Length: 124
Image 1 (cartoon, rainbow, N blue to C red):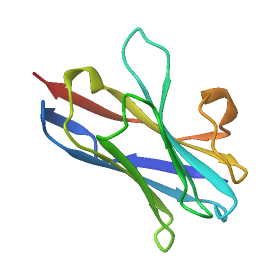
Image 2 (image 1 turned 120 degrees about the vertical axis):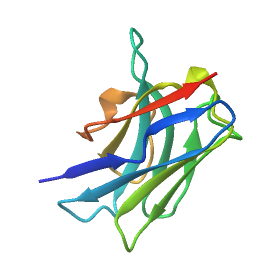
Image 3 (image 1 turned 45 degrees about the vertical axis):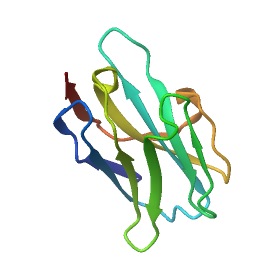
């Protein structure tokens, strides 16, 4: 059974940084792509970033480019999202997701497994 457990959310001032972690378990993820999504109150869930586990290739939403970095640690079966220069509009619940296959997609419906989410709040 696949489990994704996020951690690292919290309250931070604008301009600050946070690092989110997603611990994955339940199977071998070498043929998976991992994504980070976020959902703010009253808004749809949106893509933030993704990484292909096998080769480390990445993709970012325009809102994340230059500020966020997604990475994975094969030994720890963990995916990270380093978020710098945070803005109040980054406030949301952040979710980790996994999909089978060695390429990333950006629509939530394309992902098979989800974590429970972690709250990120950026104050102005």
